[in-house]
Image (cartoon, rainbow, N blue to C red; front, side, top):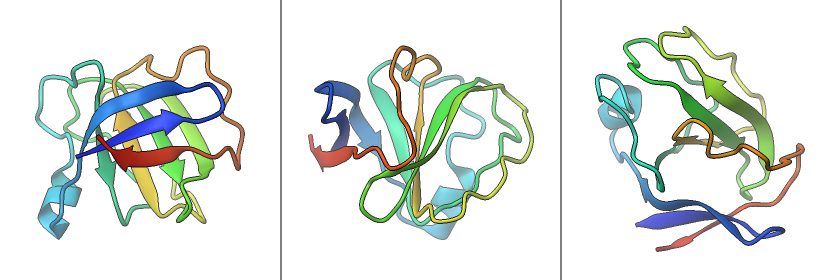
Length: 117
């Protein structure tokens, strides 16, 4: 299992990240679930775009490049939002409980760290 840390602040954004390994698992993502517990998240790789169809709860979404640098941040994407535009240069997305990123500046290029939990 992986965790996600913001090195500049030392803040742990996710203590545990699920990692779907199949095409089907990545496509299914968090659909049909009732929620995402605090401290949990999902890392989808490869991925540069997501949708919120069949999503029953909002999420924060972090799009990262190959070196785990921020490409785009979406805060509190609403349930059933629809299609989130493709993020060029992104290689992966981390989906987190809504509000996880509150109070944290994450400019494009900010370095994050995926590490073994």
